[in-house]
Image (tube, rainbow over all chains, first blue to last red; front, side):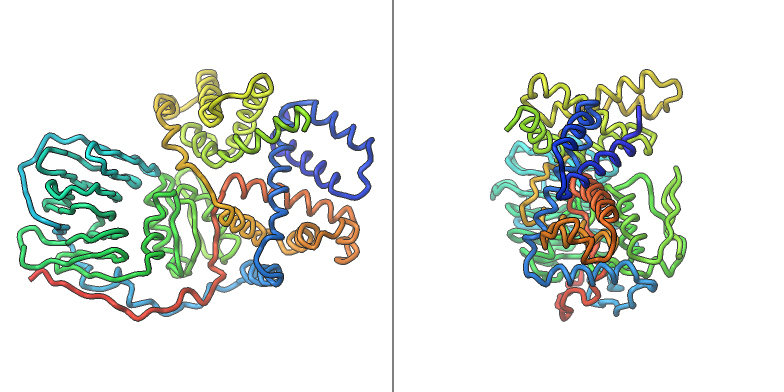
Length: 333
Length: 197
């Protein structure tokens, strides 16, 4: 059998030919004959035809000038022989603050009401690298596990307890004033009542993103200091304390786009972007040259499509990609 | 609508939209990356042939079940398959639901995808597509305007079709906008610090 590549080439040639004005009934007959020759021909043809029909919607792009703009922008992308200028590092970025760069096990609690009960037998859930899992709880709450995550859940009449042993999870907590929802990170206890938030466990800090309601971040044994984190805020908790930053709700939602299988970057250092993407893929991307690591990228990418990501990079940036079985290496061109 | 075109419409509406998920599904258990596209097409063929007899009631499940069976066949037949692939086969049954966080792209998202694909086209190809699809010029008029031969226009269109299909079905929603140099508006750092003690 001919490879799909050849068939696709033939199908595209047919479609392009039919797109011309002088399409005779004889040509139509030949095309029909080609299509009925093999289902392989037909499915390749349908696929291209459907995508091409979609391209007609380019007309719907806002403003007549958009095309020109796109052309200019894309040309810039294609011809960018130099890495984008180093824009100033945004020191406002929470993650860059030295306060956070403290090793040690992190201690946090999200508290809305306090009720601690001894551990219950727990159910465990885990996700492999690259997968996302939604776990409905019997209390009506839902937990969404991001890539490479381990949690244990125990729900009793007095408490709802989750241990986040590894990774990141998003919690949609059903309101229940009598049963606090407790997320434990490391040895600590974390509690909420009825909100939506995510908790991500990293090497030296914990990141809490709240999209609805309010939670309290607290160090378990130090009830005297706590940070309230409300909707639209991001909290980073390290050994020294908690940093709370307000963000536009849109940005907060973007941080949670992993739930749809995407990662979003804004002028992110390539080294950071690659580290983020590597969380989702067994096949790791390695940066060979610091100059590559400091290039900046933005965009919305499928978290599990590392190959597609580097292909886009190679098209837009002076990067040479070398892939083999063991991984993908990015060199400076 | 003829029988064939009704089936074709069904196929692109119910099956092709899972291309991205299908490829990932195959990639998980099939060690030979270079075969994935051929494999995908083989799955399409089987689904299409079956649907010509009778439309499956649950197209998505049917698609993934077909992929699974085909893969199982291949793995069994293959003499040099890795142990990994065999082990993964066991897990294929449970993967389907996990596979595609259902992609219900809004019209707006689709449009962004299309715009993105368009941006990725090589310059000449992009010009041709713009004139043909947006300005609605005929291939001949496009050729005249760009000063190239008609065969050249046809070739560019064939190329664009393939790119559109890969991007639209395969990598829906991916976009690279590093070309934007201004970035978002810089905001003043507004945050508070709560020290533990």
